[in-house]
Amino acid sequence: MVFKKETDNHVTWSNTYSVGIKVIDNQHKGLLDLVNDLFNHATGNEIEERAYFTEVIQHVVQYVKEHFSTEEKIMIAAQFPGYAEHKKAHDAFVLEVIKSAKEFEAGKRLVLAKLAHFLKDWILAHIGVMDTQYAEYFRKIATRKADGTLSVTKADIKQ
Image 1: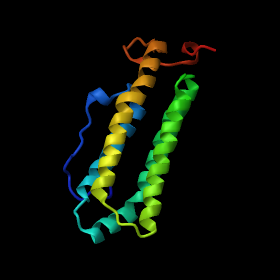
Image 2: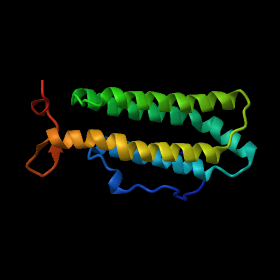
Image 3: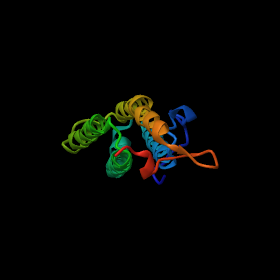
Image 4: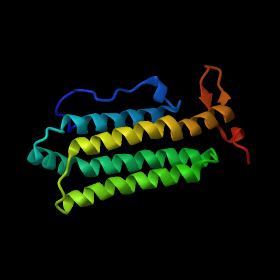
């Protein structure tokens, strides 16, 4: 990532976070990289933090929206029954991040470490609870391919 200042990991990917969908797992890893990057730029120096936040916030919002869109498309295609609730959680999270950005733009003091903790806690809780729900659903409806991997096809989805 172009914004990296240091390489400390405050949160590390674990296979327990895996939902079994490579593109989603890779995006989740990217979200954790963003969180680690935020932590690594939380210096306590308001000028440095403000400059960093100004540079990175649009990237963070865009990445989160892209990730949520990917998840939602997969849920819709697989007719996941928890889609509406999941989408509401995504929308509320995006609004919270945008609210933080607008407050920052309006001159409110930014505490980067606080934002990093919020993002870390929300992302890990969301993956651990809500994303696990659709992962379990996909595993139930999926077909096991010859190589042992699972695949969800139109034939697996109840019409």
